[in-house]
Length: 418
Ligand SMILES: *[C@@H]1O[C@H](CO)[C@@H](O)[C@H](O)[C@H]1NC(C)=O
Ligand SMILES: *[C@@H]1O[C@H](CO)[C@@H](O)[C@H](O)[C@H]1NC(C)=O
Image 1 (tube, rainbow, N blue to C red):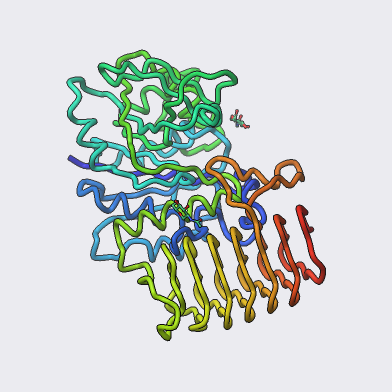
Image 2: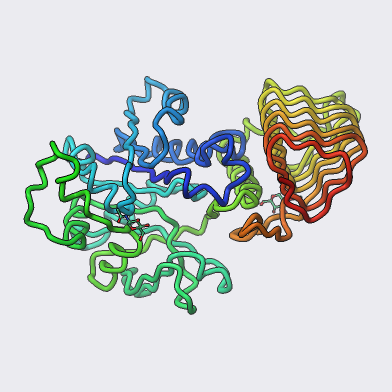
């Protein structure tokens, strides 16, 4: 059995809610638990023995992912990775349709489709086993999870037949309550998916193999969303089934939600790769005091009098001075934190400087919330410093979003600083 995986990474237009962090780096490459967000998807795909090829599909310029694509899989793993560039907004289904021939090359039996902005342990092998156990053929499986009732309307809601696991009803971001079971944005399809997209995308019966003239290619008029069109149409047809994961799941939409995602992946790393975490160290051991889940890049320098954790990642080349305290935060590459500064519930952007005795603080972002920077309004949430921000000594920055290259020389609270 041959399987392929397609990771849908969207494009810069869709990353706007991730500002200011998306101004420097494509959102799918933002580090969570010390590695690019997409690396977690790739690592999960590597664990499925049948996946021999992985596609990234999106609107970004391929060059933004070139380095990542050469580093995320080592050559001896024998998995090919390629980029499928979308140029027209044809919906997720339309995008897949455009690259149908490339995706179906070598006749894969199974196509995993994963949204790039979701975080999960991605139990793909387990999901595949359950998919194959069903006493039907040509069926599809979607990964689902239970969320709090109040948040369900933010996602694709699924009503299942509890006996058979069949999806009876699917509603994308419904206005009224439908179900607290939601789609995780992780699917198992078969090549039959393309028949469904085709059926949904207007006049069929045209010569789909004529791709010489892009404008005339009928596939270019296909505007089909996997969720809004394909899943809605498949529900109740006896062809779509639920695989429920009890493991963590979260989506990274806003920059504030990155902190929650970071926490989730840190606890996952504790279970899956504990050697990547810094071992707990008591005060006075000649090493920084480490509490809970902490990852420090080997190229960072951390003064032995610091106290870090829980839920902290320190990026490459960062310099953390004497007596610094950091809790529940992401400190990105080349940041300098001067002595005795304190950072709590914050993301500190690349090359920023936090002055001595300063305090940069937010309130913990909850899953699915942290929708700060919405319509120019600042909600309560994580404090975020963009790239190259300088916080002077002895300043308090509380609950703020600071755009790149800004210098702060006075206390700030509940602001978006442009
Ligand atoms: C396809 O649909 C999406 C969402 O409805 C829309 O934003 C986009 O402009 C459409 N694309 C084309 C080429 O019509
Ligand atoms: C650290 O993360 C874990 C897992 O999400 C969470 O239970 C805990 O409350 C977090 N602690 C802090 C201080 O953020």
